[in-house]
Amino acid sequence: MATFLFDKIIFGPVHSRRLGISLGVNLLLPTAKLCNFDCIYCECGWNGDHRGGSFNTKEDVLFALQSKLSEMALEGELPNYITFAGNGEPTMHPNFLEIIDGTIALRNSVAPLAKIAVLTNATMIDREDVRAALLKIDRPILKFDSAIQSTVELINQPAKKRTVDQTIELLKLFGGQIIIQTMFIRGCYKGVTYDNTTPQEVAAWLDAIKEIAPREVMLYSIDRDTPDSGVRKVSREELEQIAKRVEALGITAWVSEFLRKFNSILGIKQKVLYKGCEVQIKLSFQIFA
Picture 1 (cartoon, helix red, strand yellow):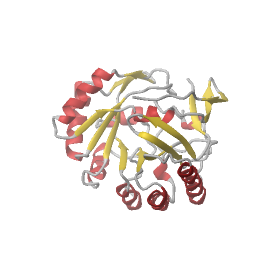
Picture 2: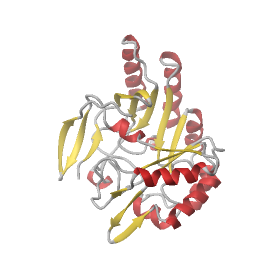
Picture 3: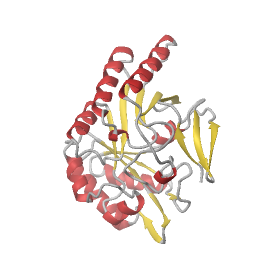
Picture 4: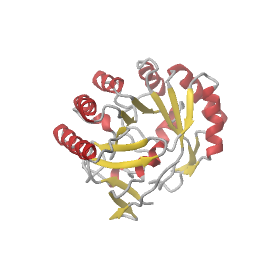
């Protein structure tokens, strides 16, 4: 399947009717992936196919962001969102808190109306500095794909050995000031069938969501190629039914195309792994609902 790596620090802007103008920030070098999950649905591919990942320096990240924001200010088109995503897990960066502090300073100086978001797999939230950084931004979006241990181990393949109960306790430390993001999928991997939309899965997940008490929940399914070909998409109708059950708990929930918006970018070149070969593609412009 065709998967990709972002080939620069700043990607975008992405134009979206829902989100406005958005910039992406990639803390990882373009040559490889660095993540402590190895999700079977990851758009960046398997960790083993992109070994040797490392980080862009704090100085390079903040310089690239300042340059892009200054360029956009001169053009009179500042971003509505600055979103940390990219070739792996951003909170693994050893200077993550300092980068967030620098981003906030740049935002306040150049684009004071912009909101800052981070997409994270929540594996590093046992670090106090990571929690502090996430609490400083507008939209900390943390992954929680299942409340059943065997499902997490199968679809996320975490390097860190942490139980679901431990993850829930760490997520509760945010006092409801986070957004939970869940990927709903089904399929078969290594001979094991999985489906985190079954009644048992959804009931356990809803119990966890009630306990975590986030301010929002984002539900989504795959929209691009995945490293494992057996992953199957869950329909929007099914996601909306689950979202209604979240809202019955008094928590805002919405079916999200958030990641797709950031992955379909005007004029950005991305490295793509297709049938074992890296090629360069240039994506076409899209305006999203």
